[in-house]
Amino acid sequence: MEPVLLECRNVAKKFGGVQALSGVTFAIRRGEIYGLIGPNGAGKTTLFNVLSGIYARAEGRFFLEGRDLTGLAPDEVAACGIARTFQNIRLFANLSALENVMIGRHVRTRAGVIGAIVRGARTRAEEAAIERRAIELLDYVGIRARANDAAGSLAYGDQRRLEIARALATEPRLLALDEPAAGMNAAETAALRRLLERIRADGITILLIEHDMRLVMAVCDRVLVLDYGVPIAEGAPAEVRRDARVIEAYLGGPIAGDVAAAGAVAP
Amino acid sequence: MNTGSARPMRHSAAIWGGTVLLAVALIALPFALTAVGTAWVRITNLAILFVLLSLGLNIVVGFAGLLDLGYIAFYAVGAYAYALLASPHFGVHLPFWIAVPIGAAIAAVFGILLGAPTLKLRGDYLAIVTLGFGEIVRIILNNLSQPINITNGPQGITLIDPIRLGGIDFAKTEAFLGLAFSGPVKYYYLLLAVMLAVIFIGVRLQNSRIGRAWEAIREDEIAARSMGINTARIKLLAFAMGATFGGIAGGMFSAIQGFISPESFVLVESIMVLSMVVLGGMGNVWGVVLGAVLLSFVPELLRYTVEPVQRTLFGRMLIEPEVIRMLLFGLALVLIMIFRPAGIWPSAVRKRELAHP
Image 1: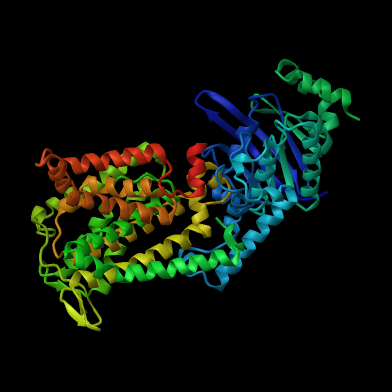
Image 2 (image 1 turned 180 degrees about the horizontal axis):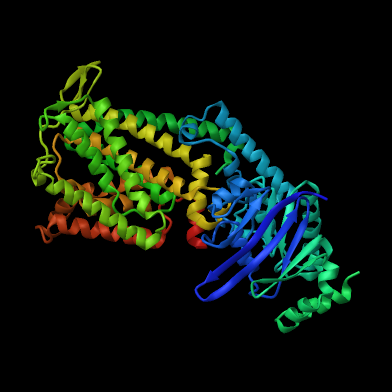
């Protein structure tokens, strides 16, 4: 069995009187695609924000390859190897797609003010490498042709892909995707599924929040189900789907139809 | 930004030709201006100082997107640093090439002092704090004559050393190659050289890893942080770099004028520099240079034309030149902002930002 990459112990987060997360404990193994599902408002994005350091002062601890990342700032978390995308796309909308990915290289490059002004051999080489890598990544996610277009002008599905390319540019160990398939049509979702599998095959572990149950069932090795901020089930997608508590959580929720549909079409 | 590498040859020949023409024009300019009147050389020198200030502020406002309404404070810090280090006030007479860098460094420290407590502020809130900072600096300079007389209060500091560089005394007229190089003409060339260096630095910074990080925090700070950009450091860097340019401009201003007082560093000056940046085209170095040149010269041109025009039209003066000058100036600003909201010569990115905020 692969070693643990990310471990969360008893993560909890409170907003005023609302307990958004409590007692969230799980471990993601290296090379897994680990799904995080649950009805709307279950606390999935909150957990992402805690993991990526955006919400300071959460309770509990989390570790990446044994290293304690609790309480680190978002840029430090990124430097340690967790990259994320956002549910409501947060690209640098007015910069070109290429520049967006180049900015993702910031954390793995070094040139400072002096380097920028003097632009010596090392800086030039670094800049060239940044651009080359950014183009490779655009190619990797399949939007190389749009490299010079403003990120905000890309089609919705392409923006989601661009966010993934930008996150990959930071050389993450763990790629955390927040609803990457939201708003995608069936063909785009199928392409996304192939992309996720390719990323995993290239050695990057994926933590996936997704409402598209068909996608979750198809790509995830294991799934954690949250409901009202509490983990209610964990396991292989096929098991979780039959779990009575999960069905109850979803049937009471607004996307009960999704589960029924996923159940009906699953192999 | 990085898309223009494959220009056709003819295009680049035109650019080279234009550059040579511009260089010749810039070199010949002070003599042409001297023919019109020495005052115009001084006005040009002041315009270049404003170009330096605008380029500095452009780093903070244009690149990093941090609205700073107190920028003139760094100009003041640089100016006073030079004045105190090179005048009879304390009897210290450091040479120009030591005093100006010290002033620039002190200004940079002030930039960090302003930046550190305001890291979490944006937009209007940051504008108010920076405005307050600018006023605090001016009021301190105005009152630091007691109990120990450091700044000489509202009287300001006089007899500041002019610049001497390698045997050239910038205060005296010298003949060279049959041409008379007056003080202002020599200052013009020095300022021109500094301006070219600052433009160079601005362009290089913009097209760099640091420049991209500034763009990223301007666009979306949370996304920038999540991509591993240490936003605190990168913002402080913007404040410090901007302040450094302000400090350099201030030191040179001090040396050229020979006299400074807190009156030169009032809020309106900050607003003026900001107008130059916004009107020229935030984020685009060349646009900002254009904005600073225009806003420096247009009021002066109006000063010399408003009165004669009134006399020819009406036979007498109806409105005070000073009044109508500011009126026309304000009108011009409003018109430009209506018809070219991203500035006269905007950066492509900024143009998009205004179209789709």
